[in-house]
Image (cartoon, helix red, strand yellow):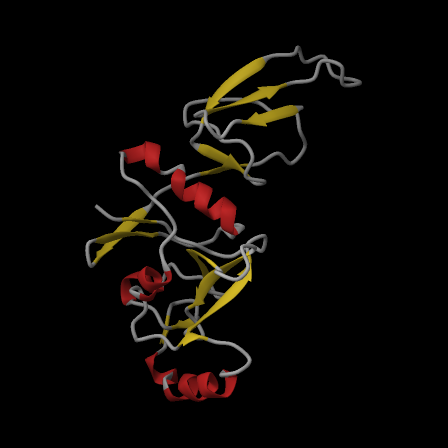
Length: 209
């Protein structure tokens, strides 16, 4: 099967290979509006399209806005955060929400991510200030709040039950020194750090009028 994902188009094209041994499926082009995304992030399928793929373990995930919360005139996506994407795939996920409601969605900045914390976060953590951050964490342990799953985080109450155990969240900011790295925030430890964009982490999307 050949998949062509054109970034400029709102559709993807799938071709079934009639030359595949043992396959009697005719070759056909199928235009698919971008609404659903596959596990590998390559093809999106619109609700209402019913397509049978003759591929074992072929799974489709829906792109969903879910509920939102307004903080300082910024609308934050707020639903059970279960999907971990690379930085680029997370950005694409937010962009693909745009066609749903006319709003412009994107990954949040570091400053915007900090707004969903219940305290002033420590900031950047690196090898040079690790001792100082450890002291800050110990002094602020009582500010962590636990959800029903027992996860303790520095997070506002309306996000609490939707947060995963390892709450590393992508920002939209790249490193100024290394374009292969991006900034993220951890709501368990209250710190910011850099990570490879090819790694996978949790994320949420924001929209600002």
